[in-house]
Amino acid sequence: MKPLISARAPYSAIVDRPKLQLPHNGRMWVWLIVNVEHWSIERAMPRTVLSPPMGQPLLPDLPNWAWHEYGMRVGFWRLYDALNQRGIVPTMATNGIVCESYPRIVESAMKKDWEIMGHGFVQGPMHKLENQQEAIQKTVDTIQRFSGKAPVGWESPGLTEDDHTLDCLSQSGIEYVADWVLDDQPVWLDAQPKPVLSVPYTVELNDIPMMLLQQNRSEEMLLRGIDQFERLWQESETIPRVMAISVHPYVTGVAHRIGYFEKLLDHIQSRAGVVIQTGEEISNWYRKQVPY
Image (tube, rainbow, N blue to C red; front, top):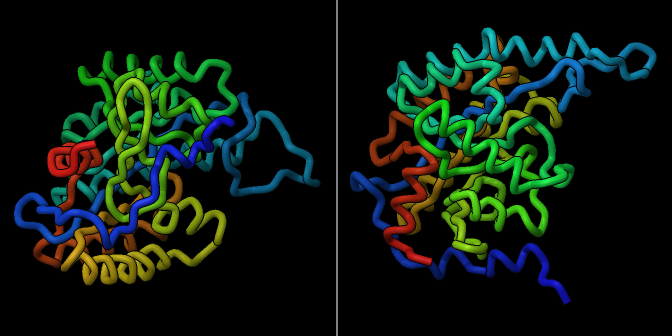
């Protein structure tokens, strides 16, 4: 009988883990992820904010494509300023094709030493790809060719994986993934030819479910973010935790939400002992302390 995909992450209780020493004598990690995607107007949109007239889907879907395009033209730059003004270096999860379709964005991220993490070549579930290995390698090669460095991190579109995805990622040199939202610390995952590390990502402090699916008011990012931070800060006194915050330019980058995001960043940075690092930095530090 074929093992379940969940068998790649053997159970481990967080209270049984070895003691971790964070960099800079820190107490807890915070990881910021900016998701930058390419939506093609000739295809159905990955998400929608406006339903079609009389419930009949239309192509081209101009209003929903334009909703996303606003994030690339305007929203991204609000996020960019908010992070740069505070000296925060995030991870940018991006489709490989963004290097070709929105080079201005990728170049600006590189200028500030943002980590670039693979996020599929185009936006769509991994399960639907005819050849996952080919698509993953194309993403890695495109980012490497554009930036001069191959990505070591990966976030599948929609966090989708099947039984083969981890092995394909490992084969292409990916060292850590953000798809397995199952812990507050990094977790080793079985993969071939090399194990892959899961760095704690988030669906709770992710603006897609928070704002688009749950349809909360704009201040929810701040309110929920403070509550999440304060509890993880308390628990990190004995067992260090990772707090991830995931945002999208067309969601958090709009005018009525960006201020709450900035206030959350200020709250986090006001606490000495918070270590804000990229996924790659967290992955590298963890694997030195807790080898596979």
